[in-house]
Amino acid sequence: MDILKKEMRLNQLEATLKELDDVQAKAEINEKIEAYKNNMMKKLTAWDRVLLARHPKRLTAKDVIECVFDEFMDLHGDRAFEDDQAIVGGIATIEGRAVTVIGQQKGKTTEENIACNFAMPHPEGYRKALRLMKQAEKFNRPIITLIDTPGAFPGIGAESRGQGEAIARNLYEMSGLKVPVIAVVLGEGGSGGALAIGVGNHVYMLENSIYSILSPEGYASILWKDASKAKDAAEAMKLTSYDLREQGIITGIIKEPIGGAHRHPKNTCLNIKDTIMRSLKHFDSYSAFEITKERYNTYRSIGFLQRFNYENLKGVIK
Image 1 (tube, helix red, strand yellow):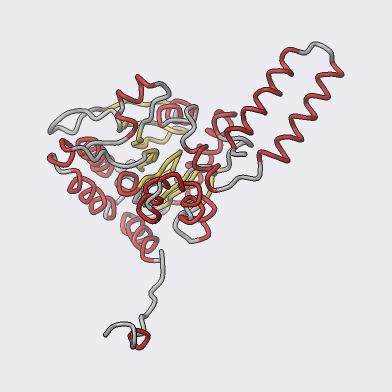
Image 2: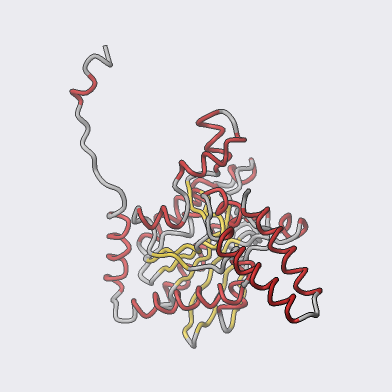
């Protein structure tokens, strides 16, 4: 039974609780709910976390901006083509500190998702993000990025306007930014589409978010020629927050309530805010050189060099 089916059962129990007036009966249902959460909702597979990362009620970038930051001034456009609604960005304050916030925006209804292209940015979205990053660097504002995309939009129009170049340019420019970059993966972190705003000094993931080179469905289609094996692919890909922390790819994990961030969004936002504030304070005494050096060292430390023994190929290649 996957997490969404378990959630349906939990919702039924909670609906029953609301209908009761008897104190004793309420206490019994409350006990059932707590037992169910502890016994059924905590044991999550990689596929469960994929489903939670894609949950229709999952926190969006705008939800986090509204809850975590004190003020926010939305800025638009890439000064070249148009404003991409898949990328939201602007100037914000958090505990009195000015920062630049850039996020990939998903909708919660079909209409909202169509408007923001299901959080799949076009090249103008990435160029808008880069414009805001360079502005932040000019005025010495830390940058907070909120990642939540299945990937960059692969349409003909996007490709003709330089999708690959826009992503590559962001990777290049972000690596040398002289202000701290703190990235938080809210839901899906899909391939270069996510990495284009994810080259951070610190990279955090919500507990039930995912970060990978492509979707489990795409992985299964390539490896096994069968997208229906996405559940198996999710296990093989090591795409959960716990997998990535173990591999040293992310800085840390932001805890979520049992059942996912959407069940208690305010608590999740408080956890996000605490994490961001700790990270900002970490850089208080850093010079611009030290900031860029730490970012460089972070990415140089990912992975390892394995020397290949060509003697092993004898008898294999003729």
